[in-house]
Each structure stands twice: as structure tokens, then as C-alpha cells.
Image (cartoon, rainbow, N blue to C red; front, side):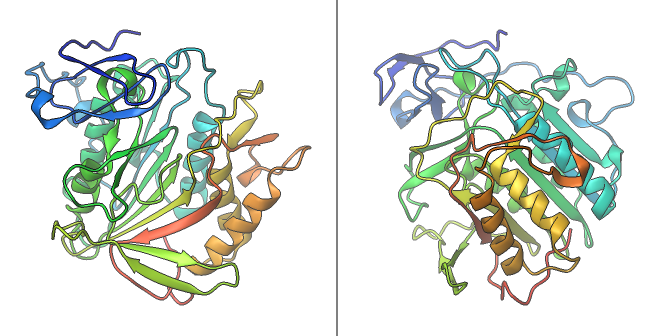
Length: 354
């Protein structure tokens, strides 16, 4: 599949392979080692003036549905089949999307025409999880948001980490998600994700993001990260940037359920493409299914942690909502779930509601 390219060259910071600098992008991912390299400011090229894709008749922005229900979701699953040199595809992300869609419709009352799915097994070019399509999908999700909206952003695939260059990261690194064409166009950095789906949220709007990818603990760049000890004690850490950059909403609330990983675990490549789901996504869906309605965030994360700890055993595993799951693939290397938010709250008093 040809996603285009062209421009200046720089060396991968890890394997020293030659990389093409893409117009308008701040980082590029190496197809040889998957490492992300920051494009130095002096080498960056202005955005290209490529024509905007034309949507089919009767469709909205980017060929996406015009329906504007109060509950909307964007679900993204990427296997990267044939995209990573010398590496197999990820097993789980596409099934993650199917299971998440079923969960939202059956348990939380989302309607199918208000759920936008992007997976790399689709033939519609507007439904492929390319960088442009993911950007348009994020804009579609929050466009015109108003009081009472419940929004969901789910990503299952590869994550990345790259050194920060604008002083807005407490740990000195930007996190990112990797679109299908990440090796040609580069990843989508947390700065951009925050600006796209966090900053526009107005009063009375709630966004829940569930991200199953390595290096995803702070991938929405939210101001507060919750640390939970093994005994259940919890404390919010202030991750607001020292630079003073605003990472909050416009009055709404954003919550990210993701996971901690050290980035050292290898991606799982399993022979059963149809029978596996991602470990983080599986633990979230199983916890939601097993816990009563109105479960608190604290209890939900505790349940997820227990499910993740028990998912590495062999044999058949009961899938969420009757899904035919035989394997749980920890392709993201996530070791335990984490919670971050645009505002602090008591995680054992506040109910999880979509």
C-alpha cells in the first residue's frame, strides 16, 4: 500500500536507518526498528498543500456519518498487516474494536450510526486508520459537542515515545499513537491528541478514552495522573506542564483509562488472528461486564488489574458479552491499568458512567 512521501532525510536515532522527513510532521517512525525519531526544528518542512479527500454524497466530514447523537464513539484498531518489515501483524486490535462496539451498544445505549470504526481490514478508504482519517475522526467526535454529550475514543494498536521538545512534559517525553501509515507519515503525538479531543470539550461533556498501546499512560496529555498502590491507596499527581501550557478542557471532563508499560515487552504475534483480543481492552470490558452498574473508577481499575493478572494462563477464556475469545494478546506490553483525568476526583466515590 502506497501512502506517499518525499522530503529531506535524517537518521533513525536507534538503528541509524535513513528516514524521510514528511512535510508538516514533527516526528517519524522507523519501519526497521519501530523507534520514533524527533524531526529537529531546523529540518521541519511546511505542511503540504495536498487536496482534501472528497466525501461520498450524503456523508459528512471525511465521509463520516452526519448523525449527531448525544452518545458518540470513535473506535480504532490496527493490526499493521504487511506494514512492519520483518514483523508479523498484531493479533487483537480489530477484535478489540468489534467487542468494544458491542459493549457500547448493548450496555450503554450507543447507536450503531453514532459509532465510527477505523480498522485496517476495511475496503472503504475513509475507514482505514491512516493519519489523516484518524485526525478527521477525532474532529468528528468532538465537533459541536454540547452539554450532556458522552464521547468515547478507543485505540488499540502500537504506541510510541519520543523526547519532548517544547517543555510541556513532566517526564521529558511525548507519547504517541501509531496510525496505519506511521512509518510513512509519523505517529500522532499526545500534544495533537490533547488539542483535538480534550481542549474542545465544553461544560457538561464527558470524554472517556480507552487506549491499548505501549507508552499510553499519559497519551492524552491530561493534567492529572492517578497513582494507585497495591493496597488500594491512591493519590493524584500534578502533571501540568511547567511551561504553563494549558492541557485541560473548555469546561468538560476528559478521562483516560490506559496502562503502564516500560516499553521493553515484545509485541505478541499469535497464529490465531480471529481468536485474540488485547489484554488491556479485554480487562476493561470484562471488568465492566462483571461489576455492577455504577461501579466506581477505583473499583473498576482494581478489577481490571486482577483480570490482567489472571489472563496469561492457557486454555479458553470467557470473552466479554459472549465474544468467541480464546487468547488474550498483550501486544502493548501493558503491565497494569492507569487512570488520568482533566480534573481530580475521589476515585472510590465517583461512579463510572458512559
